[in-house]
Amino acid sequence: MEIVNMTELNKTQIIQAAQMLNESIPAGWPTLQHAMDEIETLLVPGNTLLAAVEDGIVVGWGGILAPIYNGNVFELHPLVVRSDKRKQGIGRAIVTALEDEARKQGGLTIYLGADDERGNGETSLANVDLFDDLPGKLASFDAGTHQSGFYLKLGYKIIGVMPDANGRGKPDIYFGKRL
Ligand SMILES: CC(C)(COP(=O)(O)OP(=O)(O)OC[C@H]1O[C@@H](n2cnc3c(N)ncnc32)[C@H](O)[C@@H]1OP(=O)(O)O)[C@@H](O)C(=O)NCCC(=O)NCCS
Image (cartoon, rainbow, N blue to C red; front, side):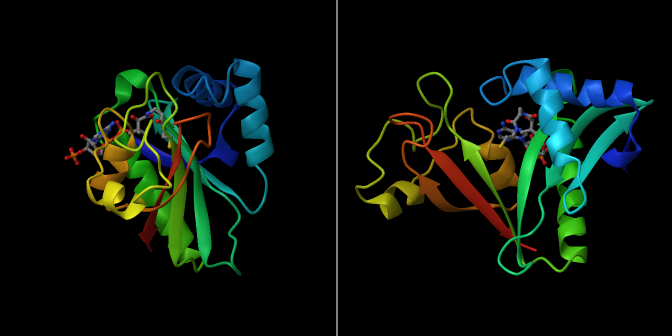
């Protein structure tokens, strides 16, 4: 598996990247066309998109957006690994490469928003009043089945929440890490 800049991918590989985004996060990108449009929008100078490629096939990809706060802060967006290729270290490899790139560009902090929006909520921050004792709720955070567990494994900490970001009881959870 190698990590390559997505500016180097061919059309077939871009479609592979779009397919996994649509299939993995349909709430964000409900059709293949939505996912293709997203890649086209993101694949511009200033952003860095990196793909994990195995035998010429894209098995995962992610990006960092042009920095904010005078170049100090980078947003990780998006991140996806093909469903049959998960839990093999590919997500970690992509995130590590993106962190290295952000660090190289002078970043101090990397962050992301992880929506807890599926079904009845996956983490302990779903379906509770986040305006009531948020510190207490953060102290006893339970990732459940949510991708939050992945970010915690990689050393990210919860740095904030947006209550009801995706509807009542469906927060966006902000994770950050020092670069
Ligand atoms: C989240 C995602 C990118 C992780 O990719 P991955 O390739 O499976 O992750 P890795 O194999 O590199 O995992 C690294 C570590 O995190 C752990 N991990 C991975 N997913 C996890 C999860 N959902 N919950 C808890 N731990 C998890 C792995 O077991 C591994 O732990 P280890 O170092 O002890 O072995 C992948 O599950 C995915 O694409 N999900 C759907 C899209 C998505 O949710 N994107 C993120 C939007 S914010």
